[in-house]
Amino acid sequence: MDVGEATAPVVAVVGVVGTLLSALLTQRAADRSRRREQERVEEVRERRRRAQDLRACYVALNTSARQYLAALTDQVHALGRDEELRTVRQRLTEARDQYRDVYAEAQLRMPDRVLGLVGGLSHDLGALYGMVRRLDDGVPRAGDSPAAVRDGIDELWGRLRRMRREMRSELGAFRADSGR
Image (tube, rainbow, N blue to C red; front, side):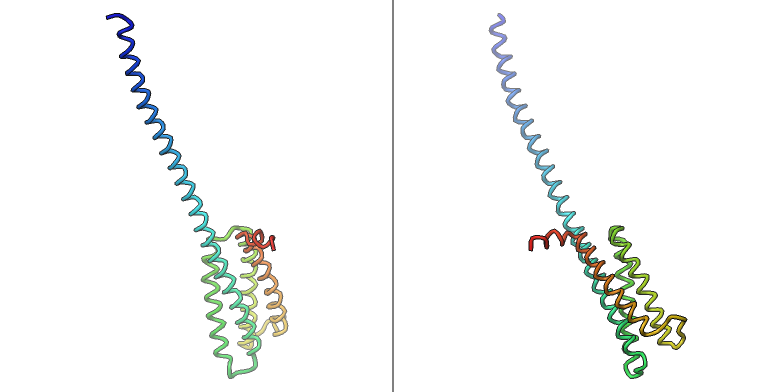
């Protein structure tokens, strides 16, 4: 057998193998590309889910803080009016318990930047609650007064607004608002 006759089958085999390998390599590249795209889609989906969870956490925290402040305000207004005091006390206790539950969950989800603001607000809500309870029980400390509670509540409403701005900023709401 001469070299020319042997070369033709080798070239044919190499051509067939090359064609098959080309198809295989193209298929593997396409699979890898699909996997990367699927991973990217899953990543986007996970980021959206985390953002929705954080948003729900922020909404619950904002709502419960507002209810807590409103209940503190009602309690101060009810001091000295015995007929509605028990109902107002109950509402304050429920609002405080709800806030504590929501705050406990929020502590695990919020970024440190927002958590610092919320932690300070939570501490001061507790201090105001203590002052209101002491006034209600008739055992005030020095500096405890309905006027001091009202001033504290007014200050906390302002801090709640700042906290809400931070939360909205964290969620990207300001970027969406900037076009208006």
